[in-house]
Length: 421
Image (tube, rainbow, N blue to C red; front, side, top):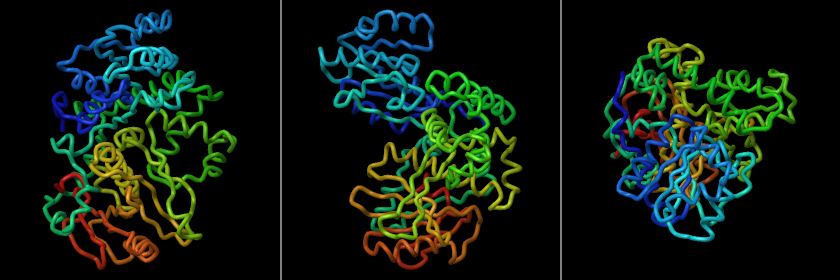
């Protein structure tokens, strides 16, 4: 379904405004085409602002010729600098300018990469800047709500909150997975969407990767990304991927870090090594947008909905949900870290949310419309190990019913994470 994305409010907008009110430099980072420039324009309304983009070759040339004079534009207002990853050395001039004239809301900088890892960027702007990551659209943003599932789970009557959700069919989930969250994807029909993603990936993995990285063999990056996308949510065994790709194991970290910096995948660290010697200490690599993955493999929603739960649909659904939690994390009222858990016996929990007070929320994802007691095995292990520190465990599945499943354990429809208010 094609939707008009021009008036969709970004749930992180209020955070950006708060940062502009108390911090000299606000940095919005995120993948290309997720709406960073649009968000910058929204928050600059009513302000004395000047906007420049380094995607313009003439503007880029001017910035390189005299960086300090370039960042001195609109000294008493807000200067918006778009796509700063094209000239990271500009941060040095920004630091100098802020140190000479420090006030909140001087600079709003956007970058299509992880700003902290840019080559040629020697300035961290520590104490002068706050970095905010903008992800693709969340389901809640598309529906016009500011969803915050973690805050809901801290409510004293979790069961009552979860039971307010409208049922969704498997075909509805498949459509969400196929489209993903990129604004441009929501403005195109399925065939044209695949064309957009194809051109997008080519641009990012060839042009942007070359600007951002000093890796010697960037021609391997595209094949690596496609290999990883074949299992969009996987425990990362570096030696196996190295052997398949013919890339030295010692070089693998550089390639996966670059894919992270390009915002094409999330690395979810393992949890539990401090609590159990049986826990596996391997990260999980999760593709950041299922629309891209669906496009790479030529999968549409109709085909996805027909697949068995464990065959493609399951890993894609897991990647989609993890991406939704990453989005909500940036505006949630609660501060939390994301992990996953797996032990040497194969018991696992797809998502571990660790709150600032140490409490743990466990999330298990199941693509089937039904569940069994075995699906709660990993969460039961954590409940036993953690005791009162274990706040609750939620099994998200594609069925319709909300069910309690013993002490602090529940089963709930997948769409609870964006519909429960």
